Length: 253
Image (cartoon, rainbow, N blue to C red):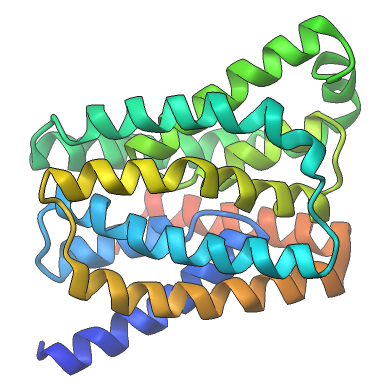
């Protein structure tokens, strides 16, 4: 495939992925395998994907903030553990070989699909009691949860949006404001993760820029759909997205 066609394919895939990432999650389940299929080593695809994720979430945070949808009071609780976890996760990812990463990615994709089909987003009432930020136990559990989010996101990124939404909605936010906080949280740890991958030479900047352009457009589309459609519509999109990825993972073409 020539360079122009590859760039167009990455832009289109990035647009779809960026939209999915903002309104639900799982966009990297599309872009990571695509870049590997296009010939990038698995570790380089993992690092290159962070270019798009960074640009996407800068755009999404800016757009959500324009609509006054970001609850900034969560930032002190969420950002530091996510940043630390993100650094550790990226450090681990760049130290395993490509074949091992591909196998880990395949297993994680299946586990995420099964876990999200368990419907953690449906446990919001129970979660609000367990993860109430006003209690010491709730704050501790939230800090652990955000640290795990950073660790997982720094390591592989694919599917982290589903995990974040489960934690945030169980903490008491609706899915619209939960999505707004989700993109802010991912933005908190992504620059460090990208820097570690780039320092190790595991970023293809040409692929990353083409993908990032699509992800940025998708981010704006996703924010607009989130704000216009509301909580119930987003929950339906999350459910459909999870089912679609689960089917694709369980019965690959």
